[in-house]
Image 1 (cartoon, rainbow, N blue to C red):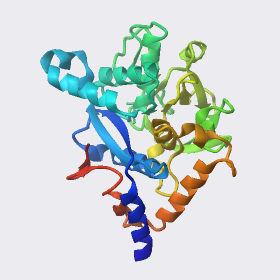
Image 2: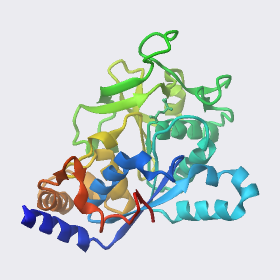
Image 3: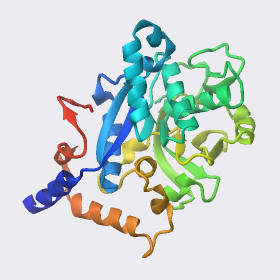
Image 4: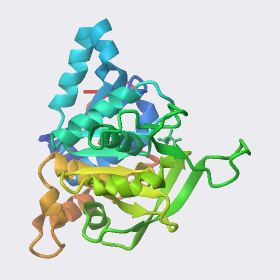
Length: 322
Ligand SMILES: NC(=O)CC[C@H](N)C(=O)O
């Protein structure tokens, strides 16, 4: 067992080339709030043989109000965002910092920077696209503006709308791929469907989907009814993916989450190699497999992956900071 730990630690210690991910969220001072997301980033970075560096960007700091009140803070936040190889907008609730997340999604979309939006991160990507590509200036989620004339994201409880308890859509749900050959389908191994975990109330308004799709946003994964949007992609972008579910919860050291792996691979120039059909002619796939099998035997100890903290990301106290 010690040998296994030693060989894994060696691989971790040997990782030198960084991959910088800007995490644009609300609770960036409390990194434990995003612990599963961090672990998923780490699993994917390890598979790509990159040392993960997470740049925490408080989304409010990207907003115009901060520019007026604290120009230095504003500039520092934008410098972090612009210095990153990839951008991640995680899940969240409530309207504080929403504008900053929308600005981060716009920046990634317009500058071909790899982007992954999770749950709220997918919803704000849709709002951003509607506002800036489709010119629907007041596009919003009814979570933030219940009177918006363009409700791109709406409450879609599965149960009663009047019964206030239990309106959250929770747990494992199935997503069917609708577009063969899209990036996320390839990353998941060209399966017909995936089961991922959910935790949300609001969803993309299905009435706007035809317009969004005509404008270039592809909803490549949907639930069995076809009414709930689960995965979006911008086919014209190197890697712009939004998921309504939480893929971080199923990521494992031996099996990084497909969409996280896509983000990291795209952020360090490995996505094309990763998406090539697997086989002898795909050395990257072989390399990933080797690194994982070498490194991750029995990584769990009391439910924690304690061995990977020193080389794959910078740790400070309880959290992860760059
Ligand atoms: N987990 C989340 O990101 C939730 C997103 C959004 N607040 C919703 O309820 O749908």
